Structure formats: structure tokens, C-alpha cells
Image 1: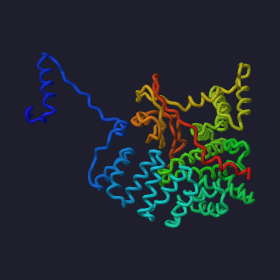
Image 2: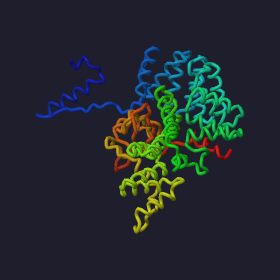
Image 3: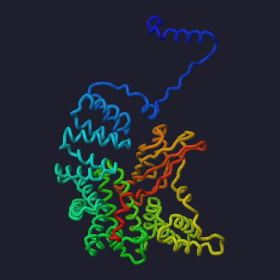
Image 4: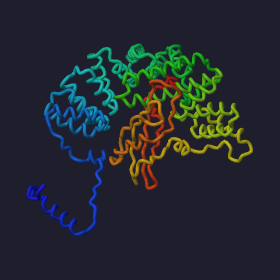
Length: 467
């Protein structure tokens, strides 16, 4: 191209380059072209324009790639041009929800139901975000509206029933019964129903449900369900049957996509998954199936970090004369605490008889170290952020989603996915593991630490004994 054909503003640049090139006998001109980071893209003003249909198509691609900042920016343009598009409002709500922007998500979903109150999941989406924002009465009303529109919506029925129970409403019991009937073996519904029966004075029904779900007729006063479920006198066949039903039900929920839009429900399921695996493992140990027992208990320990699970696993290794491994597990059991901590201390002291300090707890730092991995593919000097990780039969996540934290770490998703985590599956099934990892970078490098399981939704359900 001739210089005369260039824009006037760029001609001086070309002349400068030509002069430099002629000034040296040897030189090379290089450039380093790299894709913009997600944080740079998120911070840059979006330049995409087009018809609403073109913008929707680009937004759908951004949602599929989980680039929620871009999706939100595109969809804002769509709803400005097509304010009567309920699908666009729905997608905008999804984008904001994924960004943990509950205020904007609620606003988008309210517009969605205003435009089309009979959208297939209109009030489900709104109810869930209202619930996350702590607006429980509004969430209850939204679930009720969804059930008016779609009486067979199991998601709405479950959310409605659990909220009624949480708010202490008298109509909670029949609604929980309906929810349990439409979604069999859902551990969260079953525990809420057991609590409702106990509150209504029906102790027998409550005990029957609790035995099936947690392996004990009543939750222990100390709240350690794992210790209560892994007793010495369990019926192994009954335990296997009941625990497998819970685990299979969780797998079916993953198959149906029920956990895709509700990360808090998936997090709750992880607690029951760990409990189910632990019960299966202990039942197999009682039946003499030691190798399978170790596999299930190891998976349960890595997921739950329950002191009771580490205690039971240590007993198996001790029987197998693997004193070193048993000692290590008992140290972890003591650090994790729980109802069996004194038993773990006693066993540890016996294994380490004569050693000074035997049986003392190594401290909570030990448990954090067990859950921490290095991220060699990430080179940053500072920053902290949380990522949602989804594992599917592997110790490497199939998906990593930025949740919150320093925007500069949005681009770390691939490095987070490339790491290997302390995660194990005892068998092949539809079950997935969902964890939150805290990524932290300093001058010495970057690490990801799996956070303990979130018991926010479970804790109220463990108060059955107090009713």
C-alpha cells in the first residue's frame, strides 16, 4: 500500500518506521500478539452492535462460554431495543445471577414475569434470587405463583415447601409430604419432613425417615451426623440400601440438570453425598468388603473432612497393620474434631505409645494444607478470588467458574482447571462433585484451597431433636 493511500493521521508513523529501518544494517521487528484476558475484556467497553437478533445470538454464545460480563452487556442492549422480550430478560437475569449481582438479577426477572408471567420457569428464577437475597416472604410468593402456572414443577414445589418449613408455617407439613412424594429420596426434603413430623408430635414417622436418611433415629445433640451414622451396630444391608437410594437420587438430579441453576442446592447435596458414601463404606467394612470400604470412606473423607470418617478409615488401616497410615488418619481426625475426637486421641496415643505429645491435635492448618494445591500455570504476584469447581469422575475439574474476588483473576479459570485436587470418586455414576475453591496469589506463587462444605441450608434441618 502506498503511503499516500493511508489516513493522514498514520502517515507519520509509517515514515518513522521507514527511517528506523534504513538506519541499521541488521534489525528485526517483532510483535507479540496475545488474546486479551477476560479481565481486560470485562473492563473494556463493549463495541458489539447489531440487530436484537444478532445481539441475542452473540449473548447466547457468551452465556455458553460462561462469559457473563459480555453476556450481560449484550443483553442490556437487547432489552433496550426489545423490552418485550421475556427470553432476553430471562437470559439477562441468568447473567447477573452468575455474577452474584442479585439486585440486578431480581430486577431482570421481575421484568421477565411482567412481560410473560407464564414463562416456563419465570417465577422459579425470581424466587431463587429472592431467596439468595434473604427476601424469604417474597420468594415464597414467587414459588406459589410458579406452582399456579405449572403445578407439576418439582423445583418450585421443593423450594416452596422448604421455605414454609424454614418460616415455621403450619401448612409446611402437607407441602413437604407432597414434595417428598414428587421427588423421592431427596435428603433435604426428607430431613425437613422429619423435623415437621417431630414438631407435630409424630415421633415414629420422624424416626423412620431419619433412620433412612442419616442412619440414626434422631440427630445427635452435637450435630455430628457422620458419627451417629457410622455406629458399631448398624444393619449393613439396610444401610447400603438406604444410602444408595440417597446417592442415586443425587445422581438423577445431576442428570436432570436440576443443580445447574442452583449452586446452593448442589452444595447442600455434597453434604448428603459425603454422608451416603461414608455409610456405604462403613456398611461394606462391616460386611468384610474391605477394599470397597476403603474406597468409599476415602472419597467421603476427602469431600467432608469429617473426623468420624477419618476415624473409621484409620481403624481399617490399623486392622491391616498399616500403622503409619492409621496414625496419619487419626491425626487428621483429631484436627477435624467432632463427636469421636476423644476416641481418635485415645487410638492415636495407643499407636504412638511412648512418644511425647502423642494424641495432641495438629491444628486446623493441617486440614487446610490437605485441601490446598499449587497452580503452576498461574503467574501473578497478588490477588484472591473464589471459583466454583465441578468434577465429573476425575480429580481435575471439568468446569471452573469465577464467583467473586479480584477481577484480574477472572482469566485464571484455565489454570484452575489444569490443577489436580484432593477429590475422589468411589465408583462410576452420574454423581458430580461441586466445590468452591479460594484462589490466592502472592510473590511465592498461586494456590487453590477447597473450602469446607457449606452447611447453611442444612443446619436448620438438624434441629429435629430440639422439637
